[in-house]
Amino acid sequence: MIECAMTTRAALPLLAFVIGLAINPATACAETAKRALSDWTITPGLVVTADYLSVVKGGLKRGARGLSNTDLTLEVAHTPSGWTLSGYVLHNQGGVFNDDYVGSLQAVSNIDTTDALHLYELWAQKSWRDGEAYIAAGIIDLNSRFDVQESGGLFLQSAHGIGSELAQTGVNGPSIFPLAGPAVVVQVPITDGWWTRFGIFDAVPGNANNPDRFSYVRLSKDEGALVIGELEHRTDAARLVIGGWRYTTAFEALEAVDPVTGEPLRRRDNEGAYVSYDRTLITPDTEDGPGKVAGWVRAGFANSRINSLSHYIGGGLVWTGPLTTRPLDQMGLAVAMAHRGQADRRLNPGRKTETVTELTYRAVLSETLALQPSLQHVHGIGEAVSPKSTWVAALRIEWTVF
Image 1 (tube, rainbow, N blue to C red):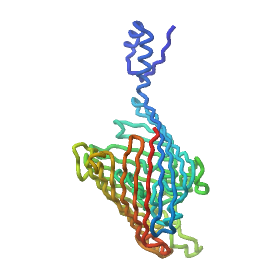
Image 2 (tube, one colour):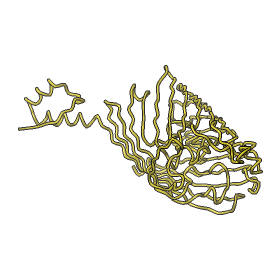
Image 3 (cartoon, rainbow, N blue to C red):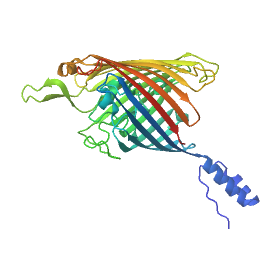
Image 4 (cartoon, one colour):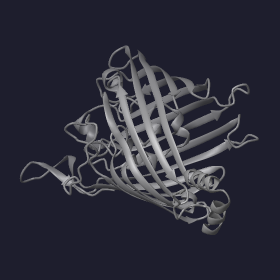
């Protein structure tokens, strides 16, 4: 007797299956299994990124260091039902170059962190309307869903991944690299070209006392949540995002103290907002082909009575295919300006604004290998003891194993 498993999601109607089984049982079973398997997509990924950074002038001290970042991902998607499962393990080596050599408020490498192996993401998502609407739950990187600066992804400077005024917040930082925490995210389309998304994230991802643990999940009323929302409008040439965020728990004020106890006052208004606009300025014959020039700008603010930075503004230009013989290469120029609040400057006298300018070129050598030299100038580091001007040269190697 020939047996063949068939789920209710099988594409072949029951009647056709029975007829096919009567005519050619083996072929019918094989075709049914093939169709069932075709509904699933399994996508593994392994990407190794290495940075070699050197302070060539200024900084806390002259010197160089290598950093490495390994991303191991696995995504399983069932197309008919709209379900996706995703896992992500992250490994970093090299230590904290920025703290040891540069001393800037904004890290000159977006893979610069302590040596550790983390379970970075693990989530499930149910989608509708070809992915335009979804609900996701699990351990989620906030910056993969919110405050995404699409053109800014080219640069090594961390501020062009997530705005500096948002990245500074929280006890252990928000749910971003290198520690993500439990979250629920919902996206709903409003009308053609308009979306809204809303997320509730654990306010303290990972373990604040031991941030290098592989995995740590703890939900606590005392720690609270980070609530964030966005409104997005997208056209063929442009993308506008308006976002706002707030922590649900109280934080110590930088300056204000209780007149009776003398302890720092606790405030419940750790909040902020941001806006970003990304636009194609020069359109080639094909949308992403050689000669495309895109530009973006982003601005945001945070409560400076609680946080060191009061506001941030940044942006830049990205030229895809600057050489006709190298259509996949990209060249970019970007600026990130972080402004310290008055309370922080009174407590820690120093410069008001830190401005980082980056010039970079990403050369795609093959489908799996890219080289990216970068030069950054850091002006006005926010500590009075730091040199006013620092130059950092870097080379990034990105190897996509699979």
